[in-house]
Amino acid sequence: MINPISFSIPSEKICESICKKEKIVSSLIPGDVSTYIYDTEQQYYNEYKKSYFAITTKKAGWDCLRHYEILANGCIPYFIDIEQCPENTMALCPKDLFIEANILYGIFMNKTIDDLTEGDQAKYNLLLMKLFEYTKNHLTTNKMAEYILQKTNHMGISKILFLSSCIHPDYLRCLTLHGFKKNHGSNCHDYPKIPHIYKSDSIKYNELYGKGFTYSNLLDPLLHDDALDISIENDIKNKYYDIIIYGSYHRGMPYYDLICEIYNPNEIILLCGEDIHCCDYNEFIQRGHNVFVREL
Image 1 (cartoon, rainbow, N blue to C red):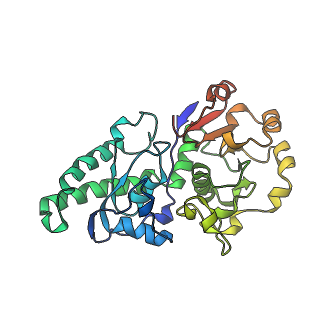
Image 2: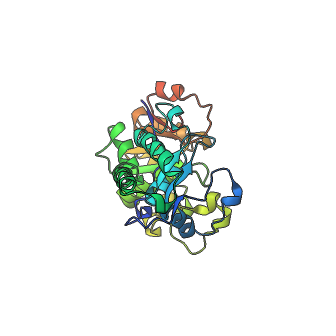
């Protein structure tokens, strides 16, 4: 009852077409803060769109939102040391294609754009299309939501309660919640409301982690039913929801004792999106809960 999970990308962030390339490798270098020069999401995305390759690597954890942002903008990641990534971490990503990409990068890195041959371009375009199609078909937020329901045998459910203890940005929680909201609308109720994932003119992006790029200002506010906030405890007692999802069980599990009295163990799903965690997920597996761990 433990499964791997990873970050994902909102489908609306995937570019509609591949842009003309202007440089071999992006100037944005992970860990070099002097290259973090982008004030807007569009400026940031454009840097990837005009690059053949973009460097990415493990940070505190192997899974990183940057991997998906590179892919979504029609660029190929050069993923340092991807061969060392544990088998069950980033298990939903096309690591075999990333390894192919690293080999191709070795060919391109010593060339200028003018030096590229038709054969080079053909190899690049073929691999780019494989990665681009894989991203659209497997790595979107709504596909991640489907994956969770498939793995827990809950594909036929109608109403979901998505619980958090902290409303501060949490990539896995925010992106996965976005996928459930896209698939189920207001029938997936986030409590408390995660305000920055909803469209608003008052979001203070500079106060959000990563300036809110990719995971904020996404959803129609009408997809949150404020009335359900008021009746939350009674709705749990009356089993109004089919399943309960904790977006980050490390950061708090509100109403857990009450929920355990009302719901069957397998109707409670726990997500762990931490880079480095010391969670004893075996405890929750033994209780019969479904657990999804990012850095497994």
